[in-house]
Every structure is written in C-alpha cells, then in structure tokens.
Image (cartoon, rainbow, N blue to C red; front, side, top):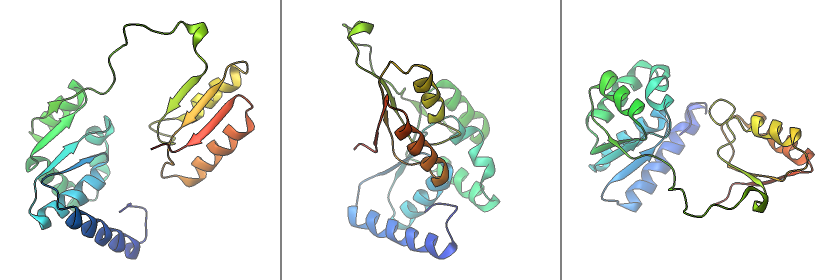
Length: 189
C-alpha cells in the first residue's frame, strides 16, 4: 500500500497483499525498499507467523526515510528491524547507520557486477544505457536526458518503471519521445 493513497484504497491494498502472501505461503518473506512498505510487510509476516528479511535498497532507507514515518510507524519499523531474521545492507554506510540508529547488525551484500575480463572498446559500443525507476529525487532520469540532448550524435536507451510522481514520469516519457536519439523501453521484466 502506498502512503499517498486514500485510506479505503490502503485498506484494500493491504488486504490484497495479505491474501497474496498467505497464498504464497513462503518460508521467509523478504522486502527491499522503503521503510513504509517494510513496516507493512513486517506486520503481515507477524500475522502469518513467518520470518522476514529486510533488504535496504538505498541509503535514505536508513538515513532519512524512517524519520518521515508517522510516530507509530517509526516504532513498528524499529521493531521490524530488531525482529528481522536478517538485514541486508549494500555498503558500510548503511550498515553503520543501522548499528548507530537502531542497534541492529546487518550483512553487507554490495550491488553490482564483476567487471568482465574483456571490455568492448568505446568505438564498439552502440548506446548509453540507463536503467532505473523514473524518480526525480533518487534516480534523476532528467539528468540522463540532459546528457542525451547535449550529445545528439550518440544513441541513448532508457529503461525503467514509473516512479510514484506520475506527473514527473509523464514529463520524462514525453521528453524522451521528443529526443531523436533516445529510445524509451519503459519497464522491462
């Protein structure tokens, strides 16, 4: 359930998620991302009497987003961290923040891929690739489109699902469509 939805919609989404989780009957539930949804997932795992794991998706998940939760949710989020089967951080900053703010330990599993032994020379590459949610604050695809506009002779490939601000998403999609050297594939599974 998204925090910006009307209450009746949140209740419906909460029940749908609960039914899906109950139907899945997983041995453990893992949530990656925002504290708001982590808190919801944790509550549902308690109802289902199942263990859960929290995986941070980015630094604000532990640095600033918990502070923007309503006070009762802050308490439940802290409880969720303390009672998780495991917490996965991406880097030392996140791990240290979890330890200092919430007195919990985490496993660090960095994102990324190993650099291949053979890298294509620059002149053999066909385009610039951008993959990420269309989010103005965290991902900033408008910066990528600024680059595409500044380098009109290069090809740019934009891949990503919609963010939460539909007006921003629409402006990015419209702007990408207006640039001849940008291909917008939207969400790709």
